Length: 76
Image (cartoon, rainbow, N blue to C red; front, side, top):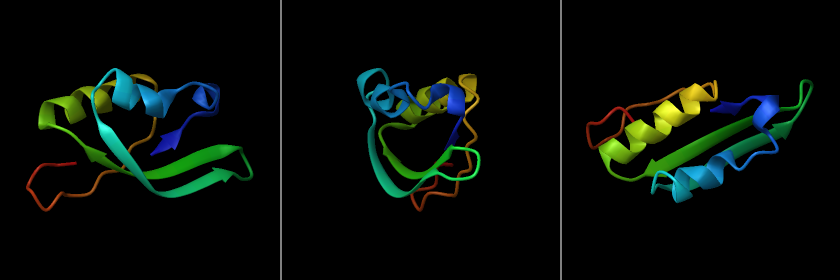
């Protein structure tokens, strides 16, 4: 995912836990760079409903999200 610069001082990730009940693991991160972009590779842990609500929240913030299939069969 890529967090827009306008939200880089906001607790976007902590809200995944506090408001959506998810556990997340940052597996890779690139911070800063040419356009001060933040790129994160996250593992999200929660129920399918929690993950869908969290993804809707992130999309509302215009966070760019790229997903890959989960071995358990869901999309995230």
